Amino acid sequence: SLEVGKTLDVTISDSGRVYQIPVRVVEKKRLKTVLGRVETVRVDPEVYGPNRMIAGDGQFSIWLTNDNRKIPVSARIKTNYGTFDITLRSYSESRSAKSI
Figure: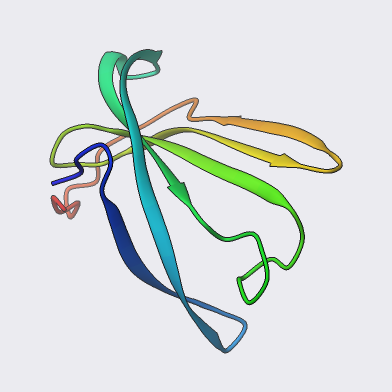
């Protein structure tokens, strides 16, 4: 369960390197999405910083549906270069999709 205030450790592999990434559960929020108005939970994977996946400064936030599917409906990346907003525009459920 993703409870606000908790931190999860996630293992991520990138280009042959393996990282243990702390993922903070930051807030719950109702958002208007391509799926309609849904309850979401914001998680912040700590991928920026010394000895992390990305050495520079920045922040990465992902909004997931707060249900058993955990669909990423939105994301924001803040860097020294600017802010990038990512939004899910369409969704179709695969017959083989499994709940998390």
